Length: 253
Ligand SMILES: Nc1ncnc2c1ncn2[C@@H]1O[C@H](COP(=O)(O)OP(=O)(O)OP(=O)(O)O)[C@@H](O)[C@H]1O
Ligand SMILES: [Mg+2]
Image (cartoon, rainbow, N blue to C red; front, side, top):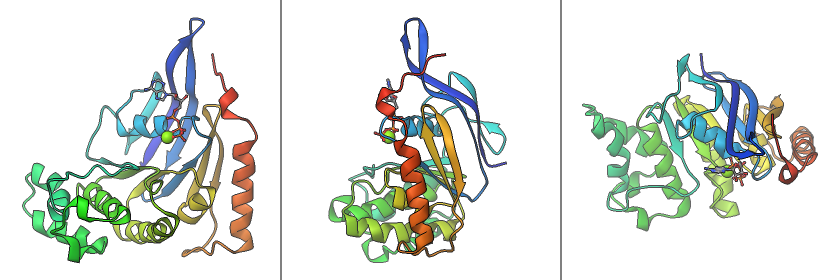
């Protein structure tokens, strides 16, 4: 059960008659309820991995499954939150969150929206339009909207990347709080090593098209970013990412 990548290969180009694999034999198992962060250099294939799990792309080889069911196209059971929120500008906060449940003709649409508006702490903004929200608020609505569909997995591709440092810091804490309340499996991509150490149960490093490190973070929450152990994880991951430059990567079989 949970999310499973088995022998996953993905190429976009053919070079000298051979597929140039961006992902080559990725194997990864994520337990239900786990918060996993994926780190790796720009261009190493993080978003590709997420897009495969989201069902936007299909693997060339291998298998991706959620609770033992193969991923075959996008589905509400895998809710995606992007860096730039994709809220409907003509809908209010509440209407954005209600959108999914309404589409599914849920009977308790209002209660579902109430629950998530409260979870993200935007009760006072439920009738505001996206243009009236700060970046952090809009991102929280994006998360609430994904959660309102009751997905099995929440997929986030650098969701805090567009926020200023202070808001980003607040949002990390907020995210942990929401995750602890919602108990969802989270697949989270970030460029920031400290962010991964702060958030994740497990950190996975992608390099040369494969998982080169898979490490559990054994720190109690809320995490103290100034503790020596925290620094140790940051050092470990930073070195691990930097070893081989992804830019020079050409993978052919
Ligand atoms: N649709 C596509 N068509 C062709 N090449 C692609 C496509 N999507 C991604 N690539 C290539 O695959 C490689 C991995 O891209 P991907 O976006 O997964 O990297 P990333 O790790 O998310 O990078 P970043 O950290 O910069 O977001 C890159 O070399 C990219 O150019
Ligand atoms: Mg990316």
